[in-house]
Length: 119
Image (tube, rainbow, N blue to C red; front, side, top):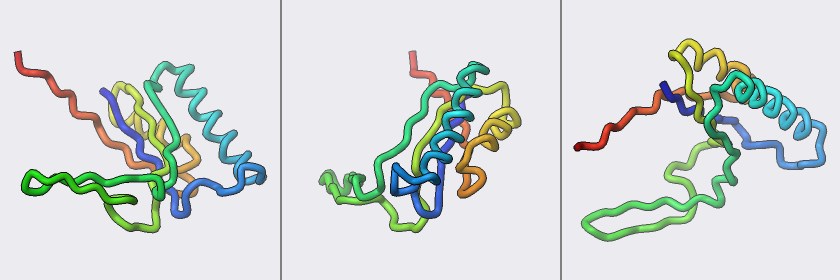
């Protein structure tokens, strides 16, 4: 079963890439991701650009509307994602708990719905 981990943090990623906080956070993510890769559960992962780089697309009555910024204004930000393949939800939750986001923010774990195209 595939699971999507959405990584949330209250203030986004550390802003200063030269700071100790940034280095510690980066190292903790690298360690968790390396363990997932070694176990063969990691399928994809990436950090996201800040919400200021987002665009939101809506189609209403056949008209496409694009606005700058996120779909919702909230203090918490999705800072990245991982896609893993695990035997079950319990295994996915154990892996999610190894991520730094679980300690200073939270990790939303969502099963990926398998869509079988019609034949």
